[in-house]
Image 1 (cartoon, rainbow, N blue to C red):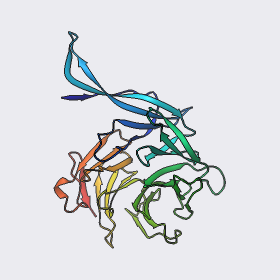
Image 2 (cartoon, rainbow, N blue to C red):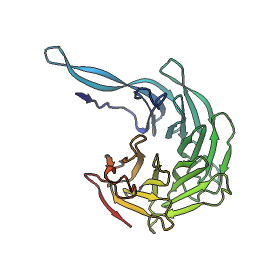
Image 3 (tube, one colour):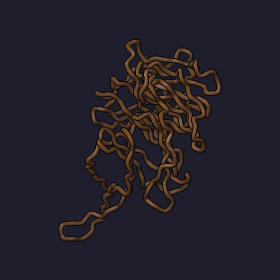
Image 4 (cartoon, rainbow, N blue to C red):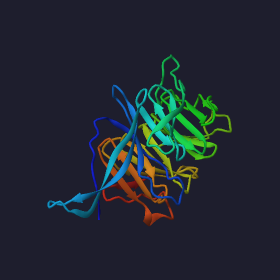
Length: 311
């Protein structure tokens, strides 16, 4: 039997991301990255999970193992770390409150990363000044960023200038975004709207635009179902979890009373997509299980704490 440990970190952690496996058949990753915020000197750090046997009172090693995270590398970061997303096994994009995006690369055969490039001033307010880059999404060699200026920017890891800037995505802050398909992205904003954009078309026009309620409660996070991209989950400032079916003309959605505080992250499990995870400002992490309703993923996820209803 294994045990897990809790490690106190003397910094405010804004984001945490597991390093992807080198290949699908490879061993489970034991490395993750963290970013900090609201510190005099913010940083990006790498951690590794180490196994330590528990020692009994008489000094003998017991059969239990404690999985302990140990910091193996740390590098300074300009501004708050707003988001982090791995592009592939070796590269990670980091969003900053200064409006920039940095590309970090793992050094071969070392426990360190180095900055490959930084795209500066991607997000700026119309009246001047840097706008925080609030969110990132990655797909193949592409990186998409969203900001408080309501803009989305498309980047390629091999190019030092943006591929495309979507100036008219939103009139308010973009809180999160994700790739639906190779050429389609979805965004959620502070006005409580979910929008889709086809970057091959006129990007000044939304392909679709939807709202949960007429109260315009901000949507803070979004993730798409790994196997069914028309199924999308969002988390709201009011603690509500919403599951959407983008195929429906009248937009079939399921609302669930989840957390007592804003939901900051919502993630489908990449290998077992009937399992969903949400974390909230209320200090809790919830695991939602929809295995029993796999034939209709829009039906409410089941949780020991969650109460669900549909509209």
